[in-house]
Image 1 (cartoon, rainbow, N blue to C red):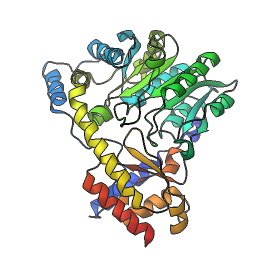
Image 2 (cartoon, rainbow, N blue to C red; image 1 turned 60 degrees about the vertical axis):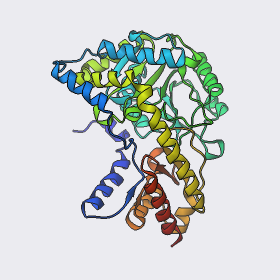
Image 3 (cartoon, rainbow, N blue to C red; image 1 turned 60 degrees about the horizontal axis):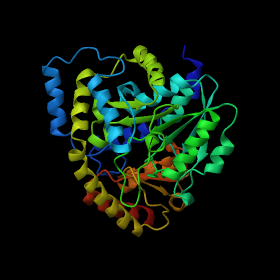
Length: 390
């Protein structure tokens, strides 16, 4: 018998398109993949070397539930140094990616029947995690006309008696929107007044482009006193997606509570991977500086090339490595009834994979990744133009 709660949870429709792409590639179909949600550079050598060293030194035992102390301290120091926070290792739990942080924080702070406000478009797993814990996601539309920023008055109106929390995503996957500091201050003040927890999902915190400014919780409240959390990841900054390494940062008592769930779900994150993560943080600036330069150039190429595509509306992404575009006119022109149908046809007929916005909470849009070489970006745009204008 399957639990009734599974009827509330949707499967990841993203995977269906990815599987289609894999099938086409196996039979030799030529297409350019603008769907990636991961960087295309390899794991840095020094991270691999630190991981191997940890293996050879015998770090293959069970990890402490909250993570090895050295890595927890390094995560706290990262925010103290970059953001003026006043965190200690007691404020940090190492998790299996940022998704693990979201799952355990929401689970330890949401009672059955509670509501969590999720700005839309959203990261595909966020509302499903809320549902898995017996909660209800309440979606707050973020419109292209407003640069995909949430409207604070609409947020206030959405908060009700059942509201328990807000999950923010900045820089945002899929829109690239970066929440400005004044807006973040308003959101956190409202949360404090209404006794709401707040999670900042900020996997792309280092992918912030010229003209935009990263803002996070310790910029507003340096002490971890209120139930405000950061969910972070090593996947995007260091291309360590297969390490399944992330962290949750927040009040010590809340981190302890989330740790109770982790102690029964997975015990702790793979021990030797944590030493790879420690090396990454110790060399973060040296590792990431050239990456940001590279992705800034790729972003500029995409923004320039995409100007040649007619009937596609978009706004300049301030962060992450995606452009989220309104493809409603393309759907009308091609007869596609949904963004998923449009994406499937673009893949099979046009030779380009993109991610349909309907899977991310915004029907009629497509997500275009620029985590690919510049020549592929140019060729992909050429193919999209040929597809839509044929």
